Image (tube, rainbow, N blue to C red; front, side, top):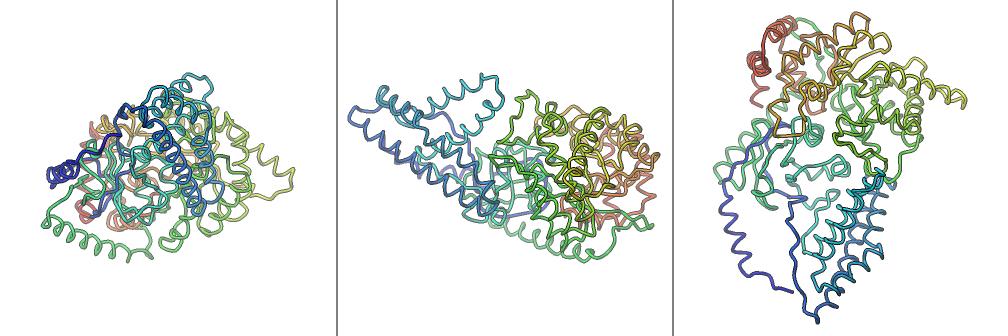
Length: 601
């Protein structure tokens, strides 16, 4: 085997000097400033190099390959144990399948045979064999088989990394408090994340409403996305300053810059302490308009902090996170226990439970998800649930059972047509009948609502309002679908404008239709937690805002600093504008006048 080049250390030092003081610009998606060392995960790897072997070295290379396979199995077993301790045994079973792939004797025999025949290094041969498998699977019509590609590539990446001597990063057990740097972070990446050691996210792709951004706001840590060159410019161990407000990442800054940002951090901490003093005060405007605030959650474990620190209800329970990182679906009883726990702990406040919303950017390893060319326009959310009544009915029964233990409301996502609402309501009626047959108690008067996140639903709001108890505006997708822009694509992020006049008109239309039928409307998208846009939301007549918990304090401070009649006037002026930039400028001027500290902190 070739020896390592002796100039590697010198080269790394030279690169470090070249990168000192580098400033990267992206999209600030979660406010705050953090100074910490970088931890690069899933770094970009080029093609595996082909290295010829002498005949005398072949057996040694095969022994090295087998040793690495064994080490990979042990890594996966250790990861399995840690995830089992954090999330439970069922959630850890996904690693059983990964271990089985590494130990697959047919794969092992093929690699060993090619090492002998071609006399090439193990990582090169293994990569070739895996690519052959992947090419074959990608042509299979069965979407379940195609979906195994992600698992195969994940396992292959681990084995190749071990063969190359790379040190893998276990997201469930991070070695130190760091800023995570990655190409992107998926829902499955963050489901088992060691949250105690993550101080911030910096990713190459993403937008304000991408999963990474939403997760960062949920965790209350700074994040910058859309940093195209971050994996080229940042290495593990680099000192970073990340500014989540202005979308800046400074690499290896000098001492004076670090000192300046530490002073800014202390200033922000003082401001946050002042915000905390409002915790017991109502979210009420200066002219007496009371706003209902609520929190968005993904897992039952988040409820305790919301109850004790914020004293609000749950405006969005994203149930899909109960399904992520599992090799089997959660049973009806498992789901019931999760929903019951939330309902009981948040009482006397209410919880809105959204039925399973998979597809788009959320894929589950245990489901036969169709291979849509555009997942956001494919079989996702209510479409998936209606196509899989076995999964849908189990969840509906679990939610109904939990409704006996608190103030539970149910919400169907991504309703696009009246027929979809009818079909979802019919399945709910079926679930009730099944519980009746089992003599199981539930609340027969549980409120039923829908997410309005598709333009067709907004246009049909007057008809849909007759058949539901409430609307919840999912502004993330509503903006994406209305302006025909992928919210996760940094190349067209300029088109993603929640302040666009067309969006304000659409929201106003939904609110008017709801009120004409005596129904209430909330906003659970990221628009609810963005201070610059909240005056618009209140100005159109929305009374309830649900957001990431970290946004509750600042938004309450804004509400207590403004007047509703001024917000209504702001809406009138916004509707006279032609562009989203004009509307945003209006809003920034208003917020800068009534609560300037929200723009600086």
